[in-house]
Length: 229
Image (cartoon, rainbow, N blue to C red; front, side, top):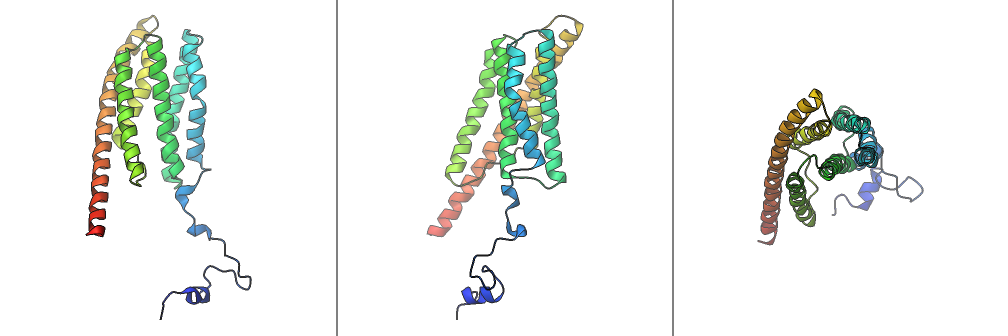
């Protein structure tokens, strides 16, 4: 006798609506909460993404103290919302797969936009841009390998978050340090300290990511070996 067959399941009030023969809609509890799209953290991440073009215009357009100041305010707001959406996601249990993509994407876009804009204005050297871009290319390659083996992207680590925050605050300080005055000199020194520290942490986070990816791939190969043995 087959246990748990169609008749058994229907007798328990399973997948068919009584008396209609139509499939029953899945209960809310059965839906995947990670598949949610409309959440407060996702809205904050989307707002950060929408601010990138305006941020670029503020840096590369006016090239005035006022324009740079507003760009810094926008960047600080982006950094604050990055911290806030994580807090809200945990407090309200609104984590989602979309959020795991949008959140780091917004962070990386602001970093890339900032370093390219600062390099264009000769505020930072292009070799620093190369270091940060090389890190992104390494992680992109690792992500492609993970996806090809059926793994989801790894969550952002604490070290990665710390690196991102360092860079998000270092570059606006360097931007303000490109002007004249005592405050500009202090901002420039502090900005370079945070940029060097943030870049080092950025590569440390990449190393941790690669170690995790290697372990997942090794575990996957071991499982396949057990199945085919």
